[in-house]
Image 1 (cartoon, one colour):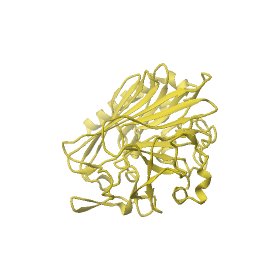
Image 2 (tube, one colour):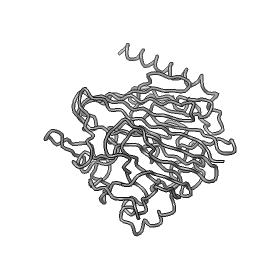
Image 3 (cartoon, one colour):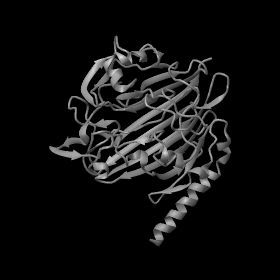
Image 4 (spheres, one colour):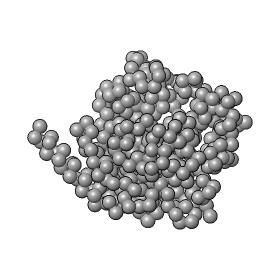
Amino acid sequence: MKKQAVFLILITLFICSKAISQTNLSNSECAPLNPENFNKVIDGKQVGLFFLKNANLTAAITNYGGRIVSLCAQDKNGLKADVVLGFKSIDDYLKATGVYHGAIVGRVIGRIAKGTFDLDGKTQSLTINSGSNHQHGGTKGFHNQVWEVKTVTDSSLVLSYISVDGEMGYPGTLQVEATYQLTSNNELTLKLLATTDKKTIVNLTNHAFFNLAGEGNGTILDHILTIPSNYFCKVNSDKIKTGVLLKVSRTPFDFRKGKSIGKDIVLETSDEQLKIGTGYDQSYVLKKKKSDKIVLAATVVDPNSGRKLEVFTNNMGVHFFSANFFKGTDVGKMGKPFNFRESFALETQDYNSPNQKSFPTMILKPGEKYETFTVYHFSYLK
């Protein structure tokens, strides 16, 4: 017990000293954050806030859920704004009605019907946390875990988490490492690595919500979205993937040539898939086979500020969500409420499902390495 206490004290001192040494970054016009508001012990583990900075971007990340708390980007007039929704304190995250803001989500993103799947002829039962289904890794998924801080530099942060055998019902002990890095090319990158000691299923993502006009600065329905995909995944009334791929052609889901997010969302009263999602809440297919190739997942432009976000990934798909359930009950770090359709999520992930054999597998075996890479590249139109 004494050794554990000493270790906790040392970790606390490390996190606090690193955060406090960077408080000059918290005075940024778009990230009014006090590191002391993130100094908290949860489940016996120390939480902190870490600031990354380079010539083009500033970011703040907490090891509670591996969350992106803040991301500051420049517009066409040289003005910066915080384009990721987040909260000013760890307590605000703990009491928020929206529980996935900026977090790394796993062990499996999305919904699993009835919380069960078959693995080698045996039915695996997961915790139920969304109606009668399992969603986003369960109540104590990766978003609600304190990650270990491995290394911190001015422009990078490496976190790790060990998900033990049986956690939320998943088999196998999964060791995960997440690396955030700001690059000189105006990018925030996220690399996710995982290995297991027993056959399991894995599909990780980051669940940041963006508004390129700035957090709390109005609708995203005027944002111009391009998704270079010919197919999206059909879902049933529980938003569970059915295993059927639908062509985007002649549907509201066709973003191949770019259009405003709000252009066809008005069809939600007549289009079955839009109606089920209460707006956009669909997975798109970027490639049908696993590979290391980095592809463009989506491009978003705010026509007023000129800010442009390009998302690249080696994943097979991307999930687009138009923040259809926000009701203004959560108030962000800028003192503004998170309102209906005033943000969007682009969750890079494989479009597979553990219960659809026609989809690519998400099984990870001992000796294999799960590895995904996502790039958020920022620029602006003049």
